[in-house]
Length: 186
Image (cartoon, rainbow, N blue to C red):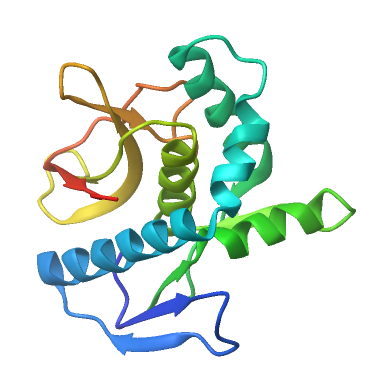
C-alpha cells in the first residue's frame, strides 16, 4: 500500500484501466479503500466470487473451517508482486479469478499487490457468509499506512486479521504501528 501518484483501477467491463490522480497520505488511502470497497460490492453483485467461495468451502463443517479453507486457497493461488513505480493498481476480484483459472491450465499464478489481494479475500469471505472489513496498518513505530488486508468481523465485533499474503494463519497479524479498520458495508 505504498501509494503511487496514480490510482489505476482494472474492471472487467472496460478494456482500459481507469487512471485517476491519487492524493498523498491518509486521503489517498481513503480513496484507495473506497475504490476497493466498490470492487467488492460489484463482485458480490456479479456472483463469481460467491460461486468460487462456495466451491472452496464445500465440505467444511464450521465457520473456522471455512475461514481456513479460504485462507489456504488464497495462499495456494495468489503470489505477491509490487505495483509499478508511481502507480497504485487495483484489480476487480473477477479479473484475479480469471488469472487464477488461467494458472490452473498451465499459466503463471495470479500476481497481486496487497490492495488487490484484500478485495479478492473480502469478496470471497462475503461469498462464504462472513462480514469482511479492510484493515490498514503502518510499520512498527510508523504513522503512514503501508499495508492493507482483509479481516473478518467476529461475533464480539472485533476484526480478525485475514492476511494470506503476509501471515501463515488466520488471525495472525504483523507487528504494526497505527491500525485502522474500514467497513465494507455490502
